[in-house]
Image (cartoon, rainbow, N blue to C red; front, top):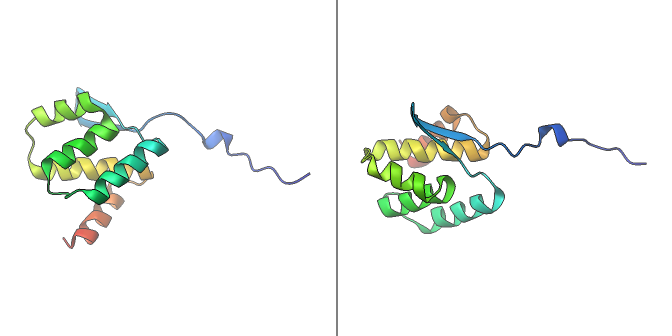
Length: 108
């Protein structure tokens, strides 16, 4: 019989969370099909278009969360931080590593 590699202990259906304030914690939908949809939207959108960013946030956090965040009327820099945090969560990276990669790719 061949070798069995057991990864069952590594598998979880627990969602990462995004915390924006003490009472503002959102589940991040990091499932495969959601991330495929997010990637498609990211490739076809201008990342400076606020409507596109709201739509991407809606994909992974849900429409209700996206509306709540939009209603906060946050600065653009905060939206960038939210997107970096989402990408870190869905790739399993630490926030700082994702932020450094974003800054490098953006030439900042």
